[in-house]
Each structure stands twice: as structure tokens, then as C-alpha cells.
Length: 366
Image (cartoon, rainbow, N blue to C red; front, side):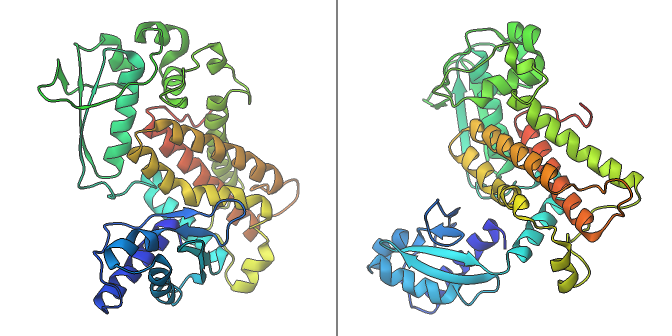
């Protein structure tokens, strides 16, 4: 069960409770679940009971009890606990099945993994100054919102800088809007688009402009061009390139990833030991990716996506080194190798999709 599946499961439980007259409250449009913080209980947590307590005229703990019995009966949910003033904490059943669902979703959706329609009813109009960081940020925010189903229009106070096009920036209108619009106002870059393109090129320039939170100054020095692990952009792109190289290497050895990354039977699945503890951080990050994209869109924060990609790249290399997806020496390809390759390919797909949303290329060779 993916986080999106769990969110839908909880929402379904709310609808059932309302339909059965156990709860008298409006059904929310969506229910947000988040990975449990360190020291918390279960795999995921949700505050929907606190959200519904007021409209239902019931204590949050009572609302939580009503929902717990309905969610606990759903397949894929192992245990539901009530913590604090009324939080629901979920422990998912059979982690291997949840992992399978995540990897299958990445394989099926490709670069669009994590896109959705949660914001389909939203119409957003943004306005920014004639400044390169504001323009690039507005364009990235547009991409994130459109990927969640929203409609977006962007205007600029003055005619666009001609060099913005080389950074992938488009503006729908120019001039002062007749009514106030939501402004995109990050800390200015302190350089023009032309200067950044000349020093860094489009990809490094975009990463430098987007990686820092809007209220922080963007790092736009020559370190963005360093071809080494100290450069987060290089590390992210190299992780993607390495994942693609694994696919090519496997093809040369005559095997591919499992469509469902397990052996042919439960016993064989367990025997492969593909899901070594070293794989857990990477699998968790892949499962969290849709939520990160949605949060980035909601908060107009492309820097969240950049940090997610850095985390995925870091976890990918740890996994790659601990659980090699390709056989070595005279070793024959096994179910474990096919399973590991599926994880590596999913990581490469998530990295490419995230870079695409930031307007940055993901080369297959570095």
C-alpha cells in the first residue's frame, strides 16, 4: 500500500462512517497522511480526526475510534493506533507488498510518477519582477502545480529578458496586473540570466536558482560545475546515469528487472533477500516521492523537490554499494539481482522525473 493508497483508504473510511450515520460531518476533499516522525508510532500518521472533531461536534478521540475500526479492516493495514489528542497511526501489513506496489507504480507511470489531480480545482495567478530567480522559480512552481492538475497563469512586471527562454522560462502576460496577484519573490540572484548562462550553463544555473529556499540566497558559484560527489547536482545526475547504465549492463548479461520485483513464489521471494535493510531508505524515499511533489506544489517550494532528489541519490548509492544489482565475476543473474535492478531503475526514473519538473536535463551518460 502506497501513501496515496492509504490516504484514499482513510478517506473511504470517513465516507463509510458518514454514510452509516456514525459520523455527522462533511467529507473532506482529501485526507493527508505523513510518514511518522522519529520516535512516533507506526509507519504513517494522520490528523483527520482532529480535523473532523469540530464539524462532528465530537471529541477528536471519539472520531478517531470511529475511524479506526473501519480503517483497520482494510487490506494492507496491519494495525491502527490512536495517539495523542486523536492522531491515527498506521502500521502497514506486509511491507514487501507495499514495496511491490510502489515499484509497479513507478514502472507504470514513468516520469509522471507522483503527478496527480489533487489540485485539479485550483486556478493560480502568479506575478513576479523582471529578475531571473523570480522568473525561474515561477516557472518551476507552474510545472509543479500543473503536474497536480492545477491551472496556472504567470505574469511579469516588465517585458521578459530575452535570455530567459534559454532557461525554459515563459511568461503569459506583462505589465502591472489590474488586481493584486500572488507574488513570487525569492531573494534576488544578483546576476542576470545572460551572466548565469555564460558562467554555468542552463542546467547548473536552474539548479542553483532553485535549490535554496526562496528566503535564502542562492549559491551560484563555480562549485555547481564540479564533477564530483561534493556537488549535489552532479551526484543526482550521476545517480540517474548510473541507474540507466545498470539497465544496459543487465541487458548485456541477458536479464531484465522483474516487473514485480520478487521471485516466483513467497518462499523464493524471501530467499532472494533482495530487500536487504540497505534498500529500506531508498524504498521509503520512492514511496514518499508523490507526497513531496504535492507539498512542493502546495507551498510553491521547488527547493523541496531538489532536496528530495539529493536524498534519493544518496540512498541509491548506499543501496547500490551494499546490494549490487549486477552479478560479479562468474556469478549468475539471480532473482535477487532482478529485484535489485527493479529498485535501481525506479530510483533512476524518480530522479529523471524530478529533474524534469525543475527544468533540468537528466543525461543517460556522464
